[in-house]
Image (cartoon, rainbow, N blue to C red):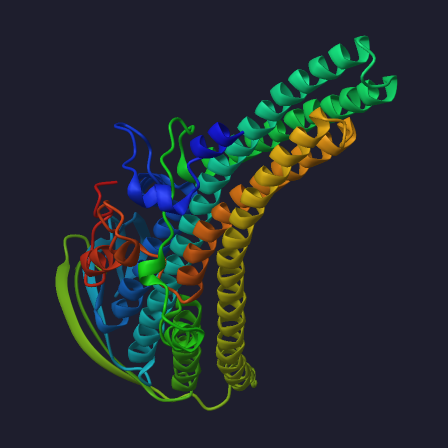
Amino acid sequence: MRRALRLSGLSVAAAIAIAPPAGAETLETALARAYSGNPQLNANRAGVRATDENVAAAQAGYRPTVSVEADIGVSKFEGRVQGSQLNQTTLPGGAGITVNQTLFNGFQTDNNTRRAESTVFSQRETLRGTEMTVLYSAVQAYMSVLSDTATLELRRNNVEVLEEQLRQTRDRFNVGEVTRTDVAQAEARLAGARADVGAAEAQLRSSIGLYRQFIGVEPRQLAPGRPLDRFVPVSLEAAIDTGLKEHPAILSALHNVDSTEAQVKVLEGALMPNVSLQGSVQQRYDQQLAGSNGVSASIVGRLTVPIYEGGQTYAQIRQAKELAGQARIQVEQSRDQVRSAIVSAWGQLESAKARVIASQAQVQANEVALNGVREEARVGQRTTLDVLNAQQELLNARVALITAQRDRVIYSYGVVQAVGRLTVRYTGIAVAAYSPKTHYDQVKDLWYGLRTPDGR
């Protein structure tokens, strides 16, 4: 059992002092895999790229629209014109180009662009939140595989110990030192230990499935995981202060406020005058007589002043104002949620630290107790049940230590996530960071083109 605990790879001291074997998967490399290949994260990145196009679409309001028209037909005329019989067939047709340019639309284009930009910024923060969630899930999956592997090894070793215990008890029963009851107790404890091995194997398979889901590969040789203490704030108050300033949920909600307020202004602009300019040039053939043709050109300025449209726009403005008020309230809701998550994560980390210390002391005490009970059992002062109970208490203490050490690592990452810093920038993952601004800069000013920046 001591050997199994040493091989578990969960001791924080060992994780720092012992270098991982060559070729072993580390927690950092596993996080790099999750960051680069996790489908949920990549899908959210694609969603942000799609949102970027809203800015280009909004800026189209600044630009002219150009259309080309062409038509051709057949016209036949039979009759008299000024006393003369006329019978002719013509092919009337022509082509032309029309250019429309909006000069003023109540600042709707300006506000539409602001709204689209705020939506992009909000989605970027949402993407950062997804990144933190995926990385934290990957940490949990990694450490769960480590702890479940160590627990399974402990329980398998416990079966071996109990098999030897049962063999010795039967030998003592055969020479009359113990009763049939002692043998039955050893047999029952062995059967329970074998059942625990089956449950531990099932738990490990479940953890491997989650590892594959978040990290993208099957776990092979995993190195010990280290806590992320260097990025944990020095105090709970500092953690809350950092979280309220930097957490993506709060920043996303603030950008959403900007977006909803811009939408109010967009709708208000619909009540203002609209000024546009239209220019056209057309070439026409066979309009009146066969063989005739001519060119016409025009420039027309238009002023449209809305008077009353049934009240629909007014209702939409009132609705947009309520949605903006809702968005402002949701900012406070996000702040409360972030504060609560930080306090909870901080408490879990402090509890895990205390449990590691207590579990280590418990293991040491149970080892001493088991050795003593075994010696006393040899001279008849303890029963077989006393030995079995002492062995079980030691096993439980070692499993509890494994769990506490696992939680110690996970909750250190949990605090960093709760304050909004569980990202590539702060975790030091050796992977090229994804920058949503790159795609945004590539598409925001595009006037035309069907291909995406990556060539699709």
